[in-house]
Image (cartoon, rainbow over all chains, first blue to last red; front, side, top):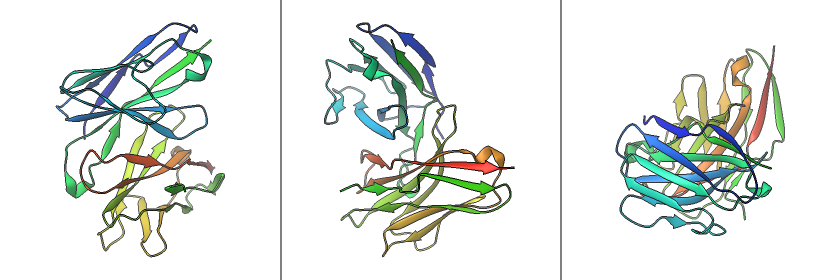
Amino acid sequence: SAVISQKPSRDICQRGTSLTIQCQVDSQVTMMFWYRQQPGQSLTLIATANQGSEATYESGFVIDKFPISRPNLTFSTLTVSNMSPEDSSIYLCSVVDPADPTTGYEQYFGPGTRLTVT
Amino acid sequence: AQKITQTQPGMFVQEKEAVTLDCTYDTSDQSYGLFWYKQPSSGEMIFLIYQGSYDEQNATEGRYSLNFQKARKSANLVISASQLGDSAMYFCAMREGTGANSKLTFGKGITLSVRP
């Protein structure tokens, strides 16, 4: 299984500022996913990031608020822009690796970034 | 309609006993996959078990087994011989269709507390 690391692990930010979260994978993967988990809630997909193309955003999420970079097959960043307290969540990076259909394309998650916006 | 339904608000189990966590799903696809994840208080998402829609046998992984009842569209997780470390939030998820780019949809989760 892929090993995923995220930086920072947690942060406390002031409203109106931006935070960039980094996701590093120990192997090359085609697709990377960014999820948000608001307090006490389930996971919601923000966007899918493929190397060499624009990220695909889910309904309710826009590029201006959550710009994503995917410069290579092992790395991605998610920026949370112009933050408000409602952005306080755990942000998780995820990959499907290896792309093995016999395992149902098992999806693995990074340790998450706990963001608190004051 | 919700694609994944987890209605148990919270579950308690005595250490060393077995516990079943319920999950029902809704899809019109013939090909889909069902997953269970564990999320301890640290926040990480730990993959536990996978069941494919065409798999005839229930999936098992150590102390975890998936009770797959296709006609009823249920995919319950059974944890045998519960341990204190099993206390966590458990999420059921589904991937519809084929392909690694198919989205994973999560249920709301169930909190499991293991009592010593």
